[in-house]
Length: 121
Image (cartoon, rainbow, N blue to C red; front, side, top):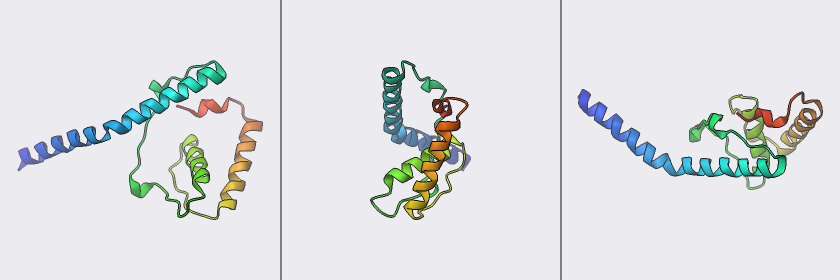
């Protein structure tokens, strides 16, 4: 029974690696895009090799219940990730998040002691 569990674990790990392969390619391509944009707009390269990539299960990711709040959700994901907080927000009326996000962004931009890009790991 022990060999079966070991074989199954090895097979599952290989299967997952194969299955996640294309996703890692997209992340690599996206990091290259961000680096090119940073070089073009700021004259600085990004060291994506030092970034920590994390993944969440479908149950851990807040789901929007309409087709109009995607931008708000992207901002909320970014806000929580740059603060290194667990993603715990839920679908609430958009004006609540929009106001909070706008206030947070303006505060960050006007009171930052370091560049906003320093949030990128």
